[in-house]
Length: 394
Image (tube, rainbow, N blue to C red):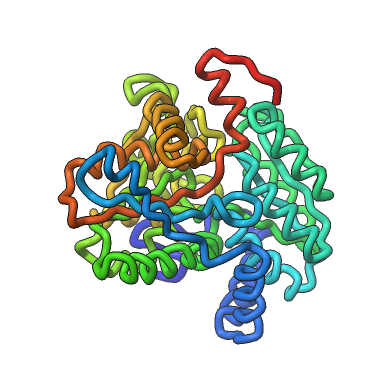
């Protein structure tokens, strides 16, 4: 694989104006990887500020109820700010400060990446602006206020479908005009090189911990690790340290929305084709003319028409499999986990829980599966209530 590529996927498909900035970012990141002071500072923040290591929780009631394999939850929802997003953001903001940047910008869908970026910016004394589709600002009004409370300015994007895709578009346009003092904290394993590799590396702490934790708990590796996939950062982090373990199945769960037989889904692997968008070559949902198609999910964080290039490569090589999960299945899993284990997870994470509810009974009781609980569900409670026909005050 060439630099910045995963087989046929990845690369740097960007305007020339951004090229020097990406080269500088790659050089700074490569130096930071080898710098023990940078790594020690990041580890200190992950441990003392973000709350790592996150727990690997044995879901005993869920396991007993489903039958079959033991179910373990990697509790990224317990991190400061409530999701895995803080892992990547702390790394990128430290890197931005090292490069002399005074301002950060970010895109966000469900709002968790925006909240994490605003949090790190407040901690490190950086200005912060976040771009969020107008539709998502309505779905995730609580997270909009959290970002503003942390001192960030939130821009409601009104172009296109007014969701995550359009927020990325606006963030990239903004970045092109202010590179001298601004770093773009891209939130997923997508975009031009070095972002897919850099974000994956910052999120790989998830699987580094989980692999050690499951060996301590079970004395053997799991039969499968499962994570939801939009752009794919929590899944990339959850998969990374298990990729070389060929007996461990890697399963990503993407948003099937109202069903693959409708136009209302975001199941990129199931329905997408190879294309170039947002600076990378990968799989994307496209219309008959090859234009990026509108997508839909009940989950703002999975409502993206593409997938990170490493995921496209893992799919093509067969190392990972990607399964569609509908809104209905995700909502049922959201409620099931709450009522069985007393854990209200993000609706994004509930897509992975839904698949594990089908997978675990098909495996032997001596085996285990790990599901990445990528975030907590406070932000989703009002939306799920509306989905169930119940109006509550937010």
